[in-house]
Length: 162
Image (tube, rainbow, N blue to C red; front, side, top):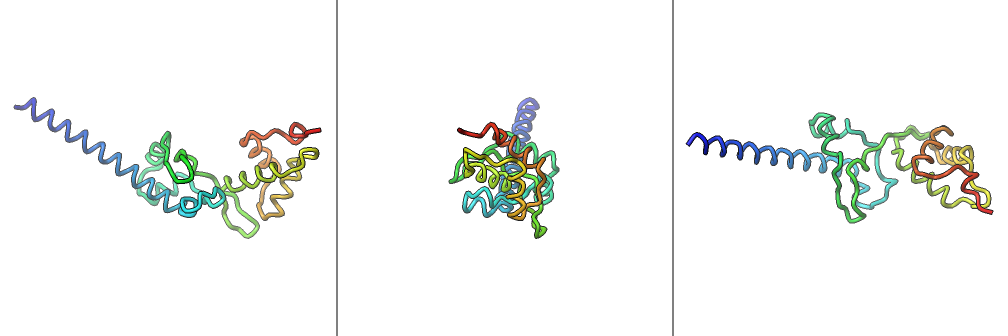
């Protein structure tokens, strides 16, 4: 009888652990959806707000490490495609007006500028910096170079076509 009771207790504990894991994942995803509401409506990456693990941890009441574990190697299927949960987290950059924008938004604008450039006379990092600053983004040339590298885009002289 003791053997059966131990097995039943172990099974109950296991079921409770699975329920708790499911609830944690649900709460975290729900909070991310609230935080990135505009993106989930439009699918437009430029609407993503800057969001770090701490933002979600504070809203859910979970520890940052728990949120990190939940977001790691998990995916969400949306009508705009399937994304890693980590995709929704990004640092922020401030604009001239003092507004916080996601670094992902800046990277998207950067890649759009490079896509639209003249292939005979590609834009230098210096020129890209000027164009982003004209759009109101406080960004250094070194940061533009870093983002360009993260996007796997070569330097201007290697993008040049004759």
